Length: 206
Image (cartoon, rainbow, N blue to C red; front, side):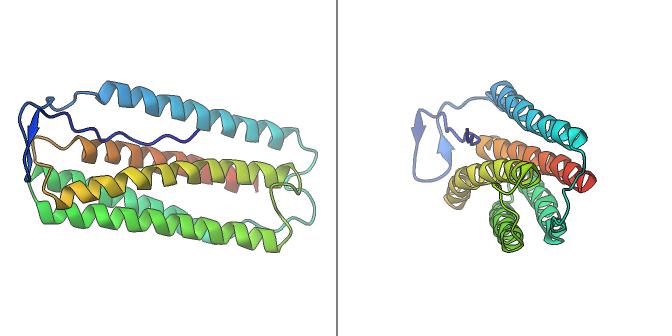
């Protein structure tokens, strides 16, 4: 199941500029979002444990005549690490009321996330051209299962990130009120950390 981080604006009266009126204090809703991330972490780590179980019980891993993992996985890893840096810069910018820095950092994060998905798609195409698909064997199935599950959640992050970007350009965030930016940063750091675990597991398994 795909999950996306929330960006709910809780206001009574908001005009055309920054949000005004009664608003929730900073930190409201954070506990629930952390619980969501923990539930997703259980999903990902259960999947990785399944991969480890298959790996260690296989007589030979990877199976004979399997292509090596694409080197561009390293590029995917670099992109998502940098995107974690840019989204954190967005948090720092909004806390300084730096609207320009906030917009630039959020757009950069979205572009890096999209590039990550493009590179992942290229990885799939490269492996498929070498006759390794999810239907080939357990080696292929577990690789695609781990990486595609993560890619789905990246897509699930890019959609609300686009909404956060639009609201940033509308001037709806300030140093006092920026839940969308805060939740998006938490979600993106989570995706970064999960990918690093997946990357290490895949490299050790190969």
